[in-house]
Image 1 (cartoon, one colour):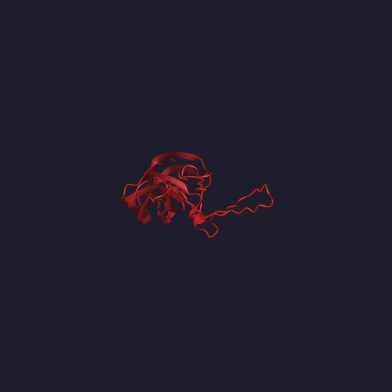
Image 2 (cartoon, helix red, strand yellow):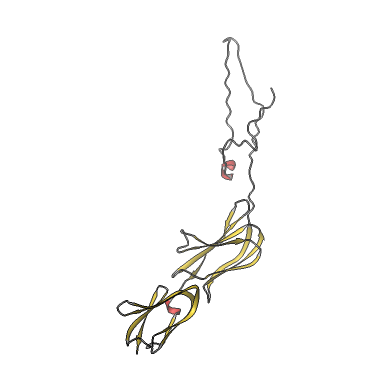
Length: 227
């Protein structure tokens, strides 16, 4: 009897095996045979000479090698820099509030090699955790180390002069997108939105009566006295 072949590269029996499965000590083939004797006095025997198992796999090339991934606070936001050595595919810039879960996709672009950068113009108010996810053309994924950087901070925003007479000035090394002026009773007196983000702005207050006012830069409040 000749060799019998079961399955092929186009007939994989609907089974997906991981490398750990194939390399495991329990991986193999179980074979059984059933003999039906019509004459009880006749003895039957069977023998298998050789079993060959071929595992078909789709190679996944790691997409890129990355060096020096880092994040730092800059004038217009948090700046991420890295260098792509080799490879192709896509790079996804991701951000998380705790570095463990809830990774948010910020940017997707092609891997082009060489020095790269990305600026998060709307960083988190607290610490932001960043990483890169490289995706190869075959679907393989490779993550960079996680880099953390402080976000917007009330201590670095200047709201002046205080007391103020005719104009409030706001100066921040990190861009902000919303500016609100409220009275001591919480009434909104002035409001501006900056879609692209700005680092400096001013609020006219010459026509307002003397008293206590609050300037809100994004989510942080600053108290001023109007003379």
